[in-house]
Amino acid sequence: MPTVYLETYGCQMNVADSELMLGKLAAAGYSHTEDPAGADVILVNTCAVRDNAEQRVLGRLGELKGHMGPNTVLGVTGCMAQRLGPRLMDAESRVSLVVGPDAYRSLPELIEGARRGERTTATDFDLEEHYDDFQARRFEGVKAWIPVQRGCDYRCTYCIVPYTRGAERSRALDDVVRETREVVEQGLTEVVLLGQTVNSWNDGTRDFGELLRAVGAVDGIKRVRFTSPHPNDFTDSVIAAMAEVPEVCEHVHLPVQSGSDAMLKRMLRRYGRAEYLECVERMRAAIPGLSVTTDIIVGFPGETDADAEETLSLAREVGFDDAFTFKFSPREGTPATRMPPELTVASEDVDRRYTELVTVVRSIARSRNFQRLGERREVLVEKVARRGGDLQARSRDFRTVMVPAESASIGDYLFVELTGTTGFTFTGTPVAQRAALPVAG
Image 1 (tube, rainbow, N blue to C red):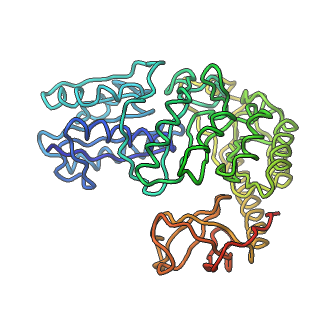
Image 2: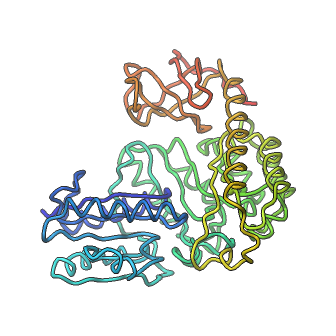
Image 3: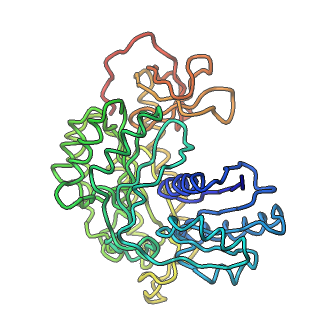
């Protein structure tokens, strides 16, 4: 059997797409290998959200050439492939395949063409493609990533996603439920519903709240998560489903990007600071103990020290449990790159504001985590920890908890008392029986 090696960069949607690609290639007679050396096919599934992600891929392509034999096919897939198209082949002469996110159905045929010496770019959008008939080769072990929506219609001024993923489209509810049942048959009990703005999902007759209820009702499913939502699409129906469906976990990743109304308007986020805070308040009122994480951009064009301070004050007011923080990265073709040059924020100001933001976010997270010591949580053991010989587990509210290796196996659920913390991860001591879980502050 010919072998294929695949590396994945970027978001959870890329992880799900990699699983789809491996499943498609397995059905076509390819065997997956964990070692690029000697592989017949090497694929790099890429992200285009920030420039440094693309630079990492270009550097990695140079490294992977050292593992290639004379007949090895080297291909680039995903958002970077969609964005750059044939320019990738110009940059890397050994790349013979450039395949966008809507062309994975043709991957076996494209690879066969490349093995005959053809160099091909496949980056047309297909707004009907959901890969519903693919059998994913899942490699996460304890959870299943299930794409329910592709593309995005919001067109925030900084974001490349509408140009690499196309317009928004949703899968049919019945297809999502069918895949969820298949996941259970494979022995998995946690699913993560994926979409660029996942809570705007609508199959024409039903909304995201109804999807959460349908997936949570699948026999054998214990946990339902979703990412990434948009603040504008948390309707009463969606929040009610989050509160009422026991399988939906008490965590939401809710990107805010900035705490300044001026910046939010320039980003075209379509909500203001007050609307974001009101959204958080509605969810916390409905879902006791809800954990809230977010994304924040520093140094967007025109950002002032006053704007940055508004972001810090919003972080303090919400009390985020964690935040992914980013320095603004201009992406070719997005409206943000056409803003007046005088709006560019000096790099030293970006660095200073980024440091201040990270300090505030970490301080909030540490304080909240120390307050949780002594609480009890149900955790799902996900993998072996990188250090110390423990197992790494995850609570329903998305806390990382280290548990003794002898206490469980990967895929097990157990109840633990949070007995220690670094400020960011916890150590958990297994408890003999289920106890009432305290409401987190």
